[in-house]
Length: 84
Image 1 (tube, rainbow, N blue to C red):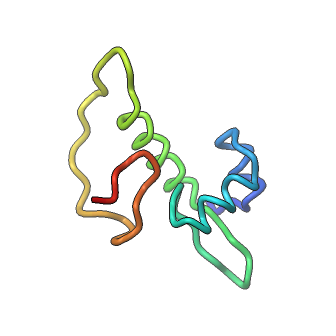
Image 2: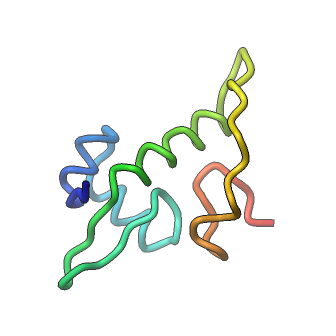
Image 3: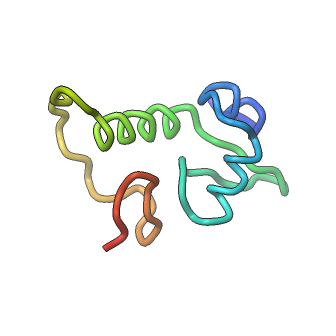
């Protein structure tokens, strides 16, 4: 399902302005334009949340997941990961 910026904001619990800032900086969850409007796929939000969980987990070890088939957005750093 495709979510608007407002819907994605509510889903993630972050202000819509934060999502817009992350988009401007090439960070945050993947998004796309359709008819001039910005959308987020719910599957991408779930994957991005899991990546943030794994990258920032304290006091334990994240359950292992099978590796993905390469980056979903080549050349665009993900929040919580170093670009280099």
